[in-house]
Image 1 (cartoon, one colour):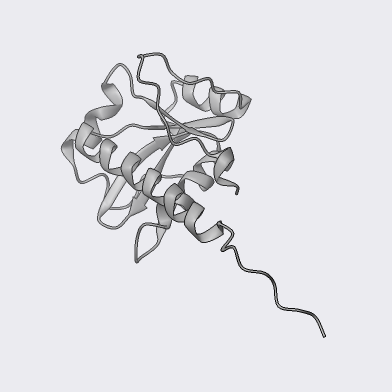
Image 2 (cartoon, one colour; image 1 turned 90 degrees about the horizontal axis):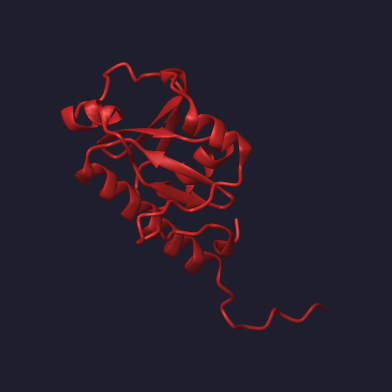
Length: 143
């Protein structure tokens, strides 16, 4: 997953970034609650919307910033969503789209948890970039 393919920036001008992935657009435009997945990372349970591929990428990048694991559920977790703000955030009129390659993920959480997850994603991108950066060393000579 090259870091240049994952764009962590969000539009500052109020205009959402383009979502070229048809599956993402379909999930984001759906009125059904069946399209909602849940990101479980550390002590957070965050509702998220996107296609399966971009949700897996988002989860994987967020997982780089935790000592535990980041998991994705495509059903409501047994314990539900603990935060009342996150539980009711789906009724808010709009949520920003976090660009992931040609798609996007909408984090339907309260503002506090939304910014925490977006920052975790951005930190994961930086970590991924550092892990995959060329170290500037030459490979050992073959015998």
